[in-house]
Length: 177
Image (cartoon, rainbow, N blue to C red; front, side, top):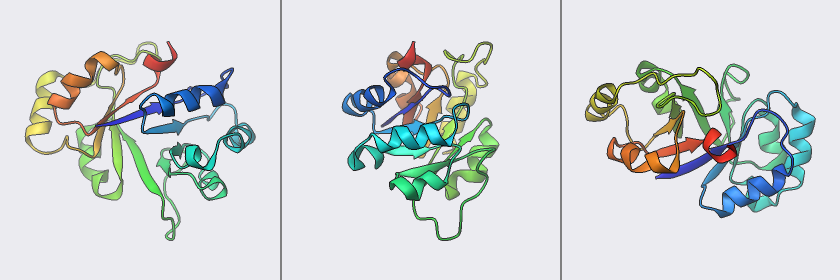
């Protein structure tokens, strides 16, 4: 099961050390999500990481940094809706409905489905799925090894999510709180 960390959208003191610790503590990838601080901050941060560390980073918001720093991949979102035809890195995307998962699964290496639980980091961002909906989606093969649970995920919820067939978990609030 994949374990993915997602950074805060703002600058965080000691961010390079945090990313290194996450990668050393069992997280497979770190999604660098920094829409608030801008591309120059991301460029400076990535420049402080080793090439091995950068190979485990997926960038949000600034696709051009993928090739500049040989990153693992790019996360598609409202700021990056498509990639060049010759793009060869990992593709990921966030989905907020099961229909979106069905639509985009074949185009991506993995998809985030959220919010599975009430968000830890986003006030008022409530779970969008009941246990029964998730179980039915798993039974239909919608939830599988390409679908990563996001939203309120903690280390304690991993066994439950694995039992539903999720291919991974993504955390932000649980690692920064």
